[in-house]
Amino acid sequence: MASIADSTIQAVTLLFGGDPDLWEIIGISFKVSLTAIVLATPVAVGIAFLLAFGRFPGRRLLITTFNTLLSFPAVVVGLTFYILLSRQGPLGDWQLLFTQPAMVIGQMALALPILVAMGHSSLQATDRRAWETARTLGAGRLRSTLTLMREARFGLFAALLAGFGRIIAEVGASMMLGGNILHYTRNIPTAIALETSKGEFAQGIALGLVLLVMAFVLNGLLQLVQGKGRPVA
Amino acid sequence: MSQLLFHGVEKRFGRRLILEGVDISLTAGHCQLLCGRNGAGKSTLLRILAGMERPDHAYVTVDGTVRQWRRAKKRLLAECIYLHQQPYLFEGSVHYNLNYPLRGGRAARESRIREGLEWSGLTALSEQPVHQLSSGERQRVALVRAWLRGPRVMLLDEPTANMDTACRQRTVELLQVLKQQGMALLVATHDIHAFAEVAESTWDLRDGRLRDADLAPADLPEKVTPIARRVRWTA
Image 1 (cartoon, rainbow over the protein chains, first blue to last red):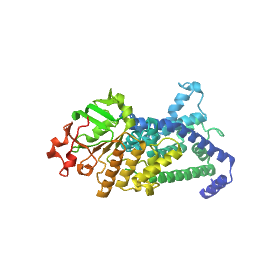
Image 2: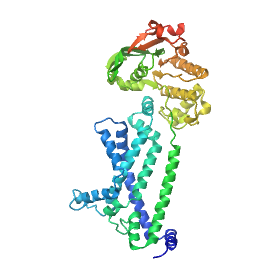
Image 3: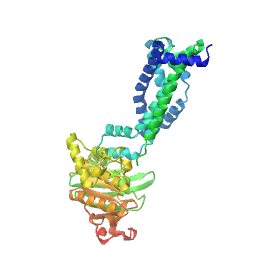
Image 4: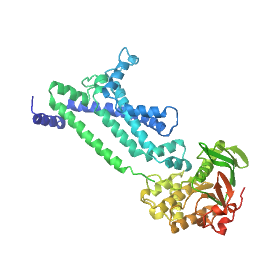
């Protein structure tokens, strides 16, 4: 087994040398996770709005459910959708198992609770007067809603970053629903798991470095965004 | 609309009766004051009149037609504007806030914003972020923003609370101009003295009912002047 230093040097060479296999894996990861977050966000914001401003039976139960789902293990999400999408499952006819759309579905399910819970918190924290002011200034319901989203934009963006951070690095659902197929469903976390099990640390470290840099960038953005979120009386 | 009449306004919060059969009329070019103790229901009444809070019962006469409040709500939202005690300004600049209620082309909107800034003496603060404004400046921005929307009725909730004398005077002057422009004004306040020169009528909201302020002199603040006590029914 090569030393850690050797593996790290190889990893950096792979990254900056433009290794096509490595960059293809990175590309698949971002493609799947960005698709999942783009599809999940409008749904989540809609639910967060309902939970923050709607008054209907079961609202509190729904809030508790989404908060509970925050700690739902990725592998259990993977297992659930595996059963649903497998040939004998109720959605077996869709023939999605071991495809990128299956990974997108799994990642959407993982991102949704974070987006809803954090979106709900940030919307609920907005001043009630914001909505009333928009309405009394002649804005219709749609414009008032968009105004409220603008007022809560820092919190909503923070939710987006946290959701993306969760799904880009998860391995359980991607492994079970994507199947880790080279050139198709192999993404960063599943590739790291595979390469490490083979004793090929260089690629694993290279991909791990990508995740680390991305985590640093996401957290930096989060700090920047949260710092800008200033309460306006 | 020269007059907007509300009849039998009732509102309960749980078992507590806040408003009981309140009748009030809002007349173009008239300013009325609404006083009463904290929690008497002044803000609730203003919000109902503005179409923002659903009453348990109320009828509204608009253009000679009597309608239930819920059927008149859209009209109320369109013609009345409510200013919170601590006005909410959207995050951004003064210019962004003044642009919010305006419609039409950019040139027309810019011209109206300039007009509003000059009217209120806020021209120098146009690009200032609102979180950097003093409470008096915030109140003025809110007032100009409301004026730019062009409502027929303005309902103000304690507009001079926590203001120094100069700011208060400036706000009263702006209200005087609005009144002269034909706007109907209803001002909830504890400081009747400050609005004495602009108001024609004063109401006291007590135990859910509106009373002629002259009939309850003992409960009115000490600063009440003879002018402020000059109460007229506009209905």
